[in-house]
Image (cartoon, rainbow over all chains, first blue to last red):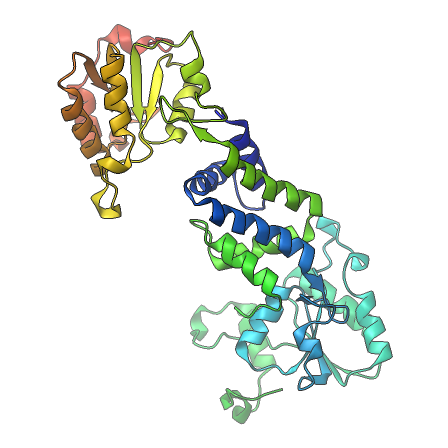
Length: 209
Length: 209
């Protein structure tokens, strides 16, 4: 691309350095910003600065927060005896949206992925072990993806946590609510049969943990 | 979405106000920025501010520039007798990339679109008429899209410019180089036949205007 303005070129360079945004999209966004009001562009820019300067990781669980302890860890009504281990804060948001889980979280900040150079040391695993040894909960729920990397991470955590006297569980895998059996993949269907639950449990939509 | 940080929420709100970026993508981008270095986020934010503060429209043609006159209008080697009218600076960049056009441009900044509330007054049409009446070129090339809106805009310009003593032309429509006839749509194929060119012209790949 030949740019007629070096400021436009710099903005396109910066925007296209974001993941999943190519140079054509970056140019489209830059031209949109040029047509926007100065205040709107200023608000966007300052929100990005504030994001980086003001958002912290919760010292206890790794969730994002404006304080050193997140709202969930600071909430006295949450059940401190259950910790759900998740990959990312997006998983925390997804589980919180269900309104079904009243325990605490531990956000790993990723999963073990040798291909991408992410080992256990890069994740919040040490802090989980420390947390569990200092104040052992009754149960830890593994809430990681069923991908190869997710299963590897879960197994690694399982090995690390097996020494503690805790209940270790994993979120249920099975046929999604509303899905038809005939379209389910074989592995999921097989697992949904081997992990079948008492009929009364399958009815309770508002079963709180 | 329930956000654990109001700064994160504000950043997601701002990013998702950009066209074509939904809240899930905005969250993904915000989390990427959180993981980036402070300097990188600062560079992105300052590039957006500089974009808005430092980039001007060329007073002559409407192209974007860091000065009051763009590089193309300021270039003494360009042919001032031919003006190509385009919708957007992206069209200028696309034509410049071919290296085939040595004339000047006039960037309308959009096309007439009653559905989106864009009338002739919103576009750089008045400045084109003024430019042509002050210093008449020999030829004006209409380089707008062949959509309904593009054709309407071209016809509007044609009516406005018919009073001047100029050659008015439109960029050629036809089968794209490398395309097979059988896959071309009927309208394009019909037009490529009625607008056929002498065989010698179809050979010249480096015919400069």
